[in-house]
Amino acid sequence: MTKPVSIDDIQNNPDTDLSLDSRLDNIDDLNYATLTDALEQTVFENFDDGLYIGMMSGTSLDGMDAVLCQFGGEENTQQPMRLLATHSQEFPPRLREVLLALCQPNGVQELVPAEGEPNSELDWFGWASKEYAEFASEVVNNLLQQSNTDLELVLAIGCHGQTVRHRPQLGFSLQLVDANIIAERTGISVVSDFRRRDMAVGGQGAPLVPAFHQALFATPDSTRVLLNLGGIANITVLPANDSPVIGYDTGPANLLLDAWTALHTDKDYDAGGTWAQSGQVIEPLLNQLIEHPFFVRTYPKSTGREDFNLAWLQDELQKFDQASAHIRYSSADVQATLTELTAMSASMQINMFINAHEDSSVYVCGGGALNDYLMTRLQAHLPHCTVETTASLGLNPAWVEAVAFAWLARQTLIGETGNLPAVTGASKGVVLGQVCFA
Image (cartoon, rainbow, N blue to C red; front, side, top):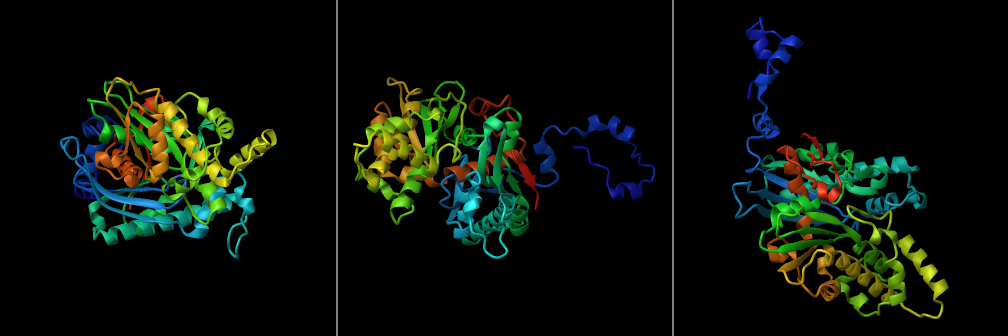
């Protein structure tokens, strides 16, 4: 790589030609073959030897996960990724309350500002961006401290931020985080804003994790389906042949299950699905809920709290009560119905790609993988394949998405694409994310 002209060059050689024409004439001599080559000789020495941190706080807003990992590079196919340390923290209550409010249009109107707090939606957005970043910095520093890791060994943090509005039909998606604060508080460069570059080339900006699924889990021997059960459920289909990877959101998951549980019990979530299992599925209500237009929309598609939320569920229950006043049900029956909605809507999509005569498996990750009843219902709807968690593939289901954003951060630094056009609907593969150097 040709060395750029420096101050020393000018001082030692007063005849140095710095004119624009001269620089343009010599631009072919720079030979910046790849972004990797340029960065390796300036900022970093090696992208494979360094460590990466991935961070994720999903739609369910149950906490922030952080992982420390190392990627083996293309030459190391035996161990492409090593998970070195993990850490998870619950959100500070006020921050979580504000984030939930921001996820709903005009939701901050329900907030009662304390002294010194904002009183408008845009001000709350700025407040939460800062507070989210301060909290994320605390999570990173705790991860480093607990794992006794020197921050100088970490090349970058991949932080997705908190999605508060996802409107692909309008061409935008808003992830709330101030990467500048994280870089300053941790001393580590931060990659964020992953979705919008994909959207700039016509994509949905989601889901982004399928590219990582392909890199880590694809095999030529069998078709594998990765099912992520976070707040929203999404699938990645990894065909056994050379067909393109398919991935998209299938509908609600923990988002509705957690909201209904918190409304009717003293729990934040239905541990193991025991509460749902105590109820009975309300078939007419299930049939009504599955009529939501998202379920019949063709992929690529993505969704979030804008489509599925507690207010939507309560409206649907009111319609159901008016049309079926003779049907009696309990809150546990609704939980059972919501669990069945998640299992059925995901399985309907998965079955489209499963051949009963081929070796196929479904691997579940996300918080829903810990819901035993939901896993049982998935297996019931997927009789032609085995349903297990990603632990069978060597990665604990709780950490898959956080690891994915560590991988995406590395893709950004080495100048490699992070999206899959066949998944998001983008016109081409692009390098995702913005880098905030420490």
